[in-house]
Image 1 (cartoon, rainbow, N blue to C red):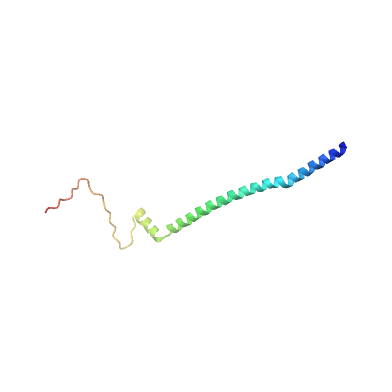
Image 2: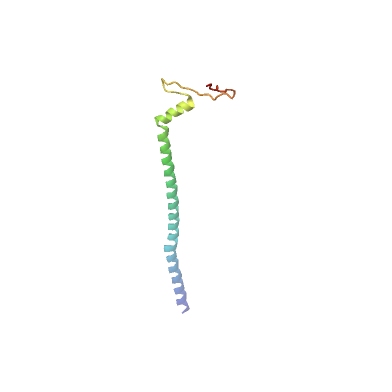
Length: 101
């Protein structure tokens, strides 16, 4: 009888070990993979948003209006045939004339 109980105990432990190895361990690995997948999806969305913003910035920087604005404001360049004017601030000593009636 004792031998039979020991054999049954060993068989139960072996079956339990097989069940554990075939079900519990893969589930833990699967949950880890799913967690990694969700993190990667979030990172992908962030990168796609950043790429869209950069594409918009590239399009803006390549536009003729933007290039003209940079040339005018940063480098003092003006189109041929135009007359640039620079308006200076008024002097604190200047007093406009009072109109006489």
